[in-house]
Amino acid sequence: MPLLPSSTPLNRMAEEMVDQYHNPEIGRGRCGSFHVQHVAAPAAAVWSLVRRFDRPELYKQFVRTCALRAGDGRAPGSVREVHVVSGLPAETSTERLDKLDDDRRIIRFTIVGGDHRLRNYRSTTTVHDGASAGRAVVVESYTVDVPPGSTEEETCVFVDTIIRCNLRSLARVAEKMTRSLSNG
Image (cartoon, rainbow, N blue to C red; front, side, top):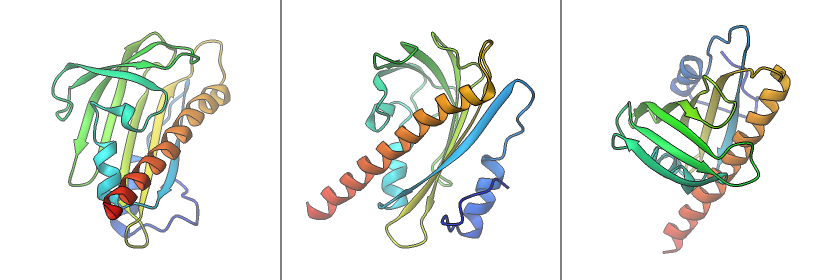
């Protein structure tokens, strides 16, 4: 099982899911990692954002626009084209939805094209109930090929930075949404 920070209490079912979905084999020429984000919002509220394959810009701050190219954004095989903000070493990313499980709160996608260097990128995100009521824990893991001319460390630092920013943004958006609903 991946080593979760000791400050990340998960129930047995969540631990099994982390072991099953966030423990990929990483072969030669590839790298990967996982990240944990605590969110002061119910898991259902967090999941309502994460599950929107068709609307990653709801919380992913580097996404400028997103358009579905195939499917409905809910069924495996759906494809989206993401346009990223300027300043990143890319303009577009074409991504395929591999799994969306609302009951277990799992989403998995693979990058299948685009003008960037992230080849064979695969991401899995799971949302779990937190240790106390009204809180969630989000776990996101990925694997990706190390591009020619880059090191494992450089590749992981780049991807880790984007994921950390996205997860922090997810927490802010979900917490704000929850406050708005409770004050509403």
